[in-house]
Image (cartoon, rainbow, N blue to C red; front, side):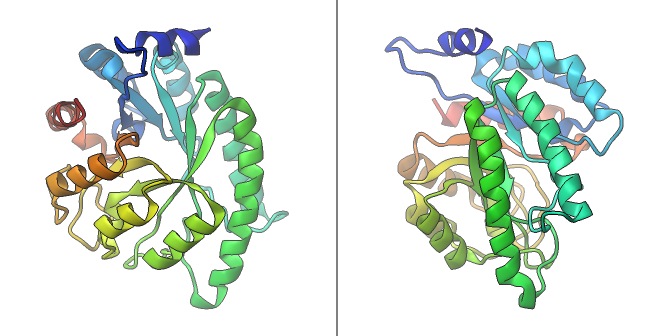
Length: 280
């Protein structure tokens, strides 16, 4: 009932559901999780939240529970756990077991909050060249398992381009990522910051996967490091790229993904207002 009520509130005059802007909760950390209240009150139904689970931190689950009544009234998606989660881990290993513990914890909250989708990282760890093919195959097998868990609750799984060259954890380059997504017909989330840090051609990436792109992670960087800076603080010409996104993928969801709690405040408010203006 909560999900239907939330969707009804967001219907426009013509009966179409208005697309909200999402804010990733990582920017609040754990100490500022209650700040979701400020953004919910300031921007109302114009924003939703992408929840980043951090069950590796003992205080996180309690903080999330306290926010559940508010989050239950908002549009919600989930980022998969990143810390202590690795999808290239073989079944039966401690790494795989720990990853799936985090995934099942996430599944419980995603069910309770009627999450629209889960963002999936093919890998988080370093990629030795000799292990690349095996790692990818294992990750795809684990992706099938995760889809079987989340899709029955109405939560789609979006595959994100992840890793950076400088960190040694980029599993797929641009052409490989594009070809895989086309072959498997994945629903795709494009992280424009990751793409920029790896020197990818963002406009070509959007053109090549336009029919499959369901969402974007929005942040900027110096063209090399995954810094999650503000929209205009980096080498991405954000206005130009946004025009491309709006033209080629007008239905895709937008997610502001800042990761440092010190970025929460006036700057985030300004960037939310800018994005809401662009999305009108």
